[in-house]
Length: 483
Ligand code: ZN
Image 1 (cartoon, protein in one colour):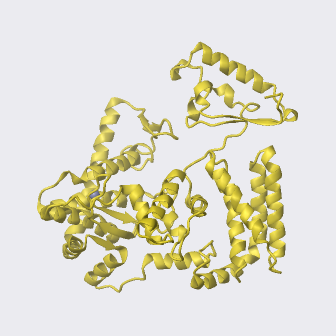
Image 2 (tube, rainbow, N blue to C red):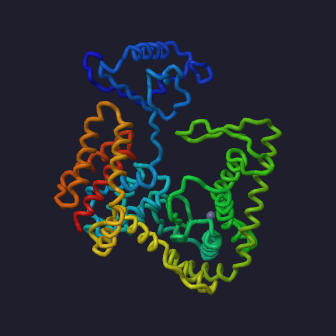
Image 3 (cartoon, helix red, strand yellow):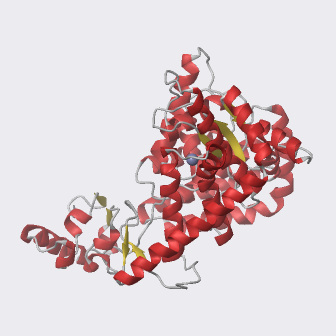
């Protein structure tokens, strides 16, 4: 490599050779150790004048040899996490670039509904949506296709040939309505998007789809408790109505248990134990496996505490459903007939029974909010366009310094070799900023900036967030062209 300098060396899965020499991690393999030692001493010889850049990638940073992580060797650590809302919007845009979409498509909404999905999931969703559109002999992908695709990726295809017996349909309906009703009754939980009892290939007999109003990074204790109550409500509904229970709740129970356990052992949310960390997460970037580090008696007590939390949640779910039995019956009846209830229909029935006015559908208000924030929206829809440009005007005053700051941040975080191109992009953006008022923004520039996002997303995604900002900015500019 020194011969070919300047160059970049990329070592994928660096934990294969850079594993800690400590025997705790199964170190002590002669050959590997020699490779590592050689690598270490070679890396010591590098300095900035040689123009060699080493990149390593691993999803088990905790088992790497400490010597490898010392300053002077791998100086900087870039953590590539699951994409956040903004990241998902950008990834969707990248994959949607070559797909024809009609004006109903709102990628922000899709991104919001796919919390926790990674790049490959999102690519898969766009692909499924395209297949769906082709199947129905349409030339454009619609928002409905995309939502269908999200469901296919998350829970599997509809399994139309599986016929449930009358009794089973009834049970599944009550189970799902139980989930949905309880989450509607609690103010801390997400609005219901859709309830369905059409079986899916991945095993679900029915499910409730939630779409959060915004992405969350923190969950309060109250929210976690509400989640538990919501999860257990399916089973509670079964018991309340049929006086017997089925195997259908196993997945709910599993999820609820793991939340309750984390509350006790990791988040310090139990009065009994207080702020003690009883579990540590071992491989955070792989399966997130946890290891108990406490005495056996404590472990047993933890189990008891978890059971207590679950019991309380179940009782609460039961009480909520008992108090709203009539609404539940109405909803279940409707669901058995129609197989699917949208969030809107759900709210209509719910509000009618409760005797309160039907609120404006959440998705609509969400759209408005977002349009006001002047985020990147579909330009094809004329109505939204006008709202959008108004938003832009409001924001444009304080936007310029922000963008420059962002460009500065991007510069800091990027490596030498990338700095040049990124600087260019930043320069360009600045220029665009200045030119924008006179309205002679070259569209091709904006296109280029989007191109950079694409590259970084496809690789290990070194800085989807950083370049993402540039792309955002570019599309914002594009929006303004329509003024
Ligand atoms: Zn359930």
